[in-house]
Structures are given as C-alpha cells and as structure tokens.
Image (tube, rainbow, N blue to C red; front, side, top):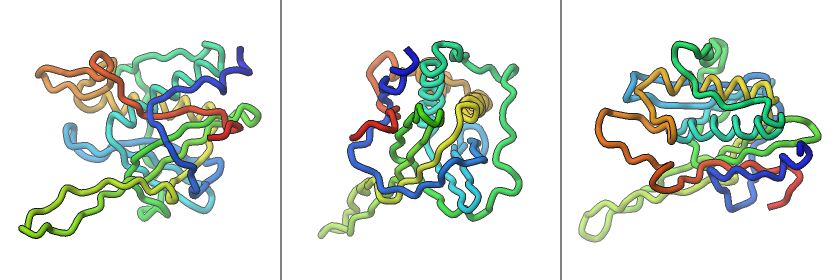
Length: 219
C-alpha cells in the first residue's frame, strides 16, 4: 500500500553514521552530466538553491545506481504507475546539461563517496545526502616506499538537498541518456562494455550503492 512505501528500503549505498550536512533545501535546479570524451568521461550531479550551489563528482556506476534506485522508489510511491524503462539513445529526450548560468566556482565541489536517498511522504519530496570522499596520503616509509592512500569519508561535509517527484523522474531519465551516450553499458549493472569478457556484478555478487529511508525513521 502507498502509506507503506516509505518503509521499503533499497540498499545500494549504506551510510553507518549520522550526517551533519550542509542542507541546500528544496533545489529548483538539479541535474547530471558528463565531461570529456567517451571512455574518459567524468560524471557529476549538480544542484543549486537560491543561495548555494553544489557539484558532486562520482563514478559511472554510482550515477547508474542512483537512476535505478530513483526509478524503483518512484514505482513504489506511485503504486507501479512509474515503471522503469531502459533508455535508448535514439528515444531518450536527454537533458540540456548544466545550465549556462550555473556558477563556474560552485559553493561546494566534492567527490562523492556515499549517498543516501530519503523520501518524505508528508511533503512528497525526496532528499539526497552525498558524503564527500578524500584520499589521505601517508608519509613515505623508512625505506622510501610510498604508502597506499587512505580513503576517508567526510560525513561532516555531506551535501543534502531536496527535490520533487517530477525532478526525480527527470533526473533518472537524464542519467540514462548520459550513460547511453558513451560506451555501451551492461543492461543489468550499467558498467561499460569494451568488447571483451564482462564480469557483471549483478550476476556475480552484490554491490551496495544507495539506501532509501523514510525521513521520519531514525538511524
């Protein structure tokens, strides 16, 4: 039933700590795009409120996972009226990319490490929290060998913003257009296909990417 949809949890990216984040509120501008040539593209989300803006860089599979979880959440919320359709390049309307007036130097510019998607049933809006990731370089060892960089999640620097169901649908469709515009992708895991053997994580394991929660539930 509809009032139970917020209790359905889609686990793709698990966060294990409470977030003290920058909250942009309900953003009028939200989208995704890719920068660079196929095979060397960088992917990002962008959001802008009346006073602040944010660019969140992420891996292709993170972006694909976000699109998938948005579609599933929308299907639950609308009781199946919104069904996932694998986008095809010739049919996808696509997005216009980042607006021309989007700040060249956004207020927040981060590399996404973890994401958490919530749905507020009373407001009928989603909120997405994106936790930055940072690589910490260790000092050289006694023999001059460089240590592997340590990855740290900056929970206190997370970016949170809200958006409508219509924006969620448009964002998912835009992401699918972006993914199909580059190299061919696996229809199951959305990883790029390069012509060689492909180990699909959907068939050979499980990769956690995003979590959907009711905004009223506690950690």
